[in-house]
Length: 337
Figure (cartoon, rainbow, N blue to C red):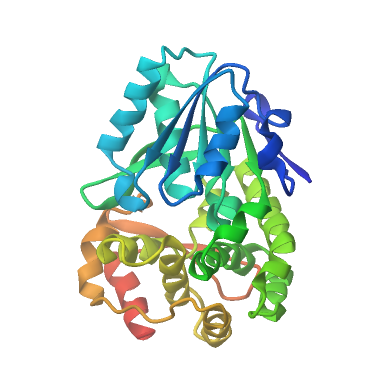
């Protein structure tokens, strides 16, 4: 399956093919110098398969986890590119989850003011969401994704067979991003996720991935730099990012998004959403004191003059944008505790 992302000169394709990793050169332009970026939590064979398809390559393996998404790792990647004598005709390939894609993409955006990069996502969360759309970033001073750039990939290669190596918790965290898209854009997808057997989520993943990708591609095409419509993809992220920063790595990104969605949907809808989240083992109650989240809300990238643009859902498949003060957001959160 090929899903085009039409962005004029920055257009690219999302290729979804089982087993594609073993013949990546059929889908990616690798006949050049290539820096392959991965992390210690990704099976080594995945990055090795990409490197083997390149005439000149180097693999850079970072420690797994959000803590690696920092200036030190960013500097390390730039130094590797410089030592390889890479130029603007060369490229970076990110092999892994959202952390790897965010960091490698930002390094590619910065080196020589921008070189090509490809995303090869190997987690469900990155396959349905973070690998598409060109958002690249690193964290700073405990604030998530506060330094970064929009830099569209030259292509995204998704091999769903990589999901076989994922722990169940990682699969559930990825499903949270699909639930987010279903809640705001596609009630039929929400019903599909709701009715899929929780005992064997893998059987439903091909359909969930394809439909989530179609939603993300459609939104990115209309708003590539998040000036309007693309904000819908931040449903659950205002509180979710604050929870993630406060948790210091004890919660996965998708788990934090799950927690962030509940306060931002209508009270009548919360029981249904809670049941779906619990079905897949996702958390539904925030353990932190809401007051501890306020400093992180103030650093939200959607904040303007003290207010934050939130995405709220009253009816599945629809959304509205509201400007709220941090105290209003915390009040909504407290109402769900």
